[in-house]
Image (cartoon, rainbow, N blue to C red; front, top):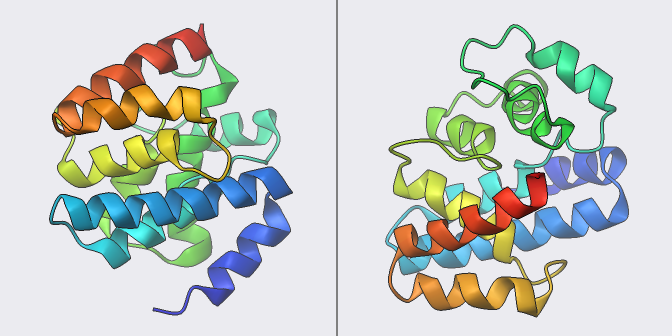
Amino acid sequence: MDYTKYKEWLKNNLNEERYEHSLGTAECAKELAERFGLDKEKAYFCGLIHDCAKCFPDHELKSQICNCNDLCDGELINPKTYHAPAGALLAQKEFGICDTEILSATRWHTLGKLDMTDFEKIIFIADKIEKRTRPEEYRKPIEDALKKGLDAALLVCYGNSIKSLV
């Protein structure tokens, strides 16, 4: 797959650090997919676009997601979470993505959800441990937990996310 047009769009719509983070997440997602026997090209693509809505103004994102039927209670309280459901909508509309696995992983990469698929888990985790913008002291405990499996790594990620969102 040629990612040129997606990378160009991201370069034009994200700040430099967020673009680097997206590249790092794509690389990490591909590695995790290979490690856990999932589609590595699909994982790379999803990692690449997972934050496509991140740099839009909060008020725009909020207005886009207010009518989403899968919003969790309280999800509109913290603007840090708006970009995930908005990103899934944007991926559909801007990029024409209809792959439900990619859309769901994009949608839930920030908060996660019950009964996540392994694909959703690797995008969630890759977002937290990519090496381009995430510091080693943040990544290391998650990477260590990954040796025990995706669920162990998720628990460490949730602990970190809760601290960050609070």
